[in-house]
Length: 237
Image (cartoon, rainbow, N blue to C red; front, side, top):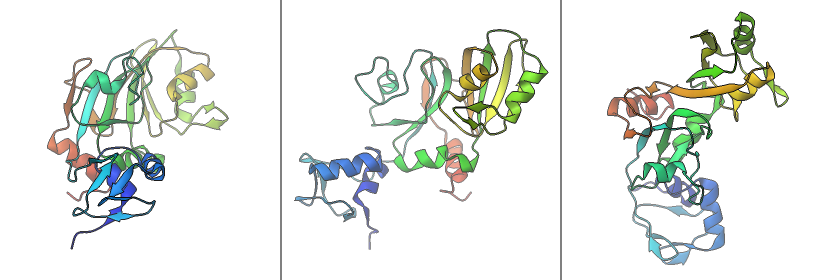
């Protein structure tokens, strides 16, 4: 017997939208199950016909995991009216959305997927998933700066978690974070009197930007996606 799932989970599993947005769609009355208007909390299974505004939504879309080398100037949003939004830049035929953010003035690795459930599993700070960056600031720094950054800096009234720092030049460093607060690195540097002039993400967990030219994307290799699923407890390998 097929296992049933809540209607909002169907939408995330098919990569259509988040559960919250799915709930809004259901509440607006545009979703139907086998011809009747869906209600919040309805259970569905593969034998059910689910439609949005009369258009049938198929079951069984394969999970898709993409890595993209985002250039400076591309905005990490799924909103189609935003110029140079990440979805338009990639132009993938499937409906995908970014996992987390990388601000417009930054470059480097970002992951995208049609798997709505994995987004929060990757972003949850308690799992301590690493993100590695190369950063250039506006002037040379000393060891005190590295030590203070590594120990945590108060931004927006709360101290950041300890992180790993290493020097790669007079005004450049490598930083490994296990949390992803909004514009965190820029704000940490600003709190210590420095301004970021280049920020480039080179790694998320075990996945690197190596081999991708600026603006290029590709699907994760099987080994990469399996390791990703294992890291969030989805797969035993």
